[in-house]
Structure formats: structure tokens, C-alpha cells
View 1 (cartoon, rainbow, N blue to C red):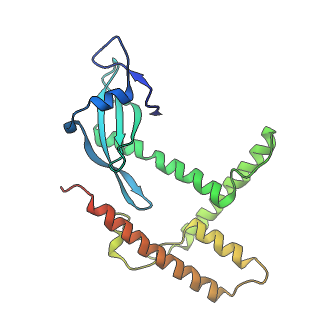
View 2: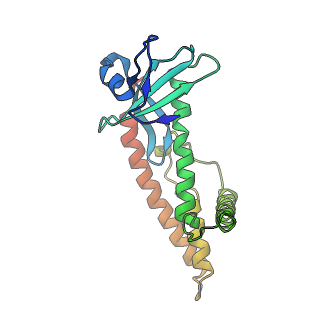
View 3: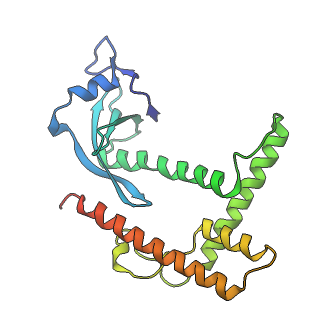
Length: 216
């Protein structure tokens, strides 16, 4: 669970709780390890991570993430029923990005936050319709993908355009149903052109991120 830097935790069975950011500032350089929090839009998301055993339970930790560029920290309170490694905790913490990406896609593509209602029923109807529209676009995008998908860990190995995305499907449908409608040939030509340029940008981002990947 992500928590604020002002969250106070106990370590070594101490009586006085200590702020999370104070604990992070006291950690030696050897306490930090570089791990990827998963694949992002621009490649692996590498951060420096550290963890501190807290509380009375054996599997309770304070997980600390530090941005390698700005040094900005983020904090997570972790509990696991069995012993977990730092890499496992990092992987779970990284899934938060997928949830945030889903909400962002719903807001930007289907207007999840574009409502002006104050009654719960009307609000519920709006978000239900918005999420249904997002599910439809996602299903259409998945069904139009052809061939073997590119290796997400090594996109620099392919010169093909990126697969059709939800924003691309929404754009194609909005253009196709507008009057006057664009010819299918021209519409698909521009779609292919956009996705090839997006693939070029993605390869550049992944090459840069791969250069920061720890050896071994």
C-alpha cells in the first residue's frame, strides 16, 4: 500500500515511531538495489529500491522507491503471508502503474470524468457506459492484432509498426463515421504511418532505457 512520507513506523521493536522519509535518509548506499517495476510505455521502469523490516510480524516491511534522476522517494507498507524477496515486492508495487494507466485511458478516450451530475444513479450510469465503451475498444484492438506480437522486452528488434491501440481504434471509428467519411484506403494508410512513427519513438525510448539496465 502506497503511503505518505510522513507515515511513522517502528523498527527494532522501538517504542517511538519514526517517519518514513527520515528512515530513508539514514540508509547507507549499500541498502539500495536497482530493480525494474515492470514494462512501461517507454521501456523498463528502473528505480533504486530499499526495504526495512518493521513491526512485530516477520513479513512486514517498509518498501522505499527512489527515482534515479530526481532522487524523489515513494513509500509502501508491505505485508506478505510468507517470506517474499525484494524483487517480488517491487513487482507487486509496480502493478499500481497498470491500474493508473487504465483510469487514464478511460478518462482520455471515453470521457470517464466528463460528467456533471450529483446523483449517485446518474453517476453510476455514466461510468458504466464509459467503461463499457473502453471494454469494447479494447476488444476491437485485440481482435485486429495480426501476426505474432513484438517482444515487449526487446522492441528494438522489429521494424514493424506498433499494434493497433485503443486510441487508434477510437480515432479510426470517429473518422469513419463522420460526414464526409474518409475512404478506407486513406484512413488505413494514415493509421499505418502513425503507428510506424510510434514504433520508431518506442525503439528510441527502449534503447535509452536498456542502456541503464544493470548488467547480469
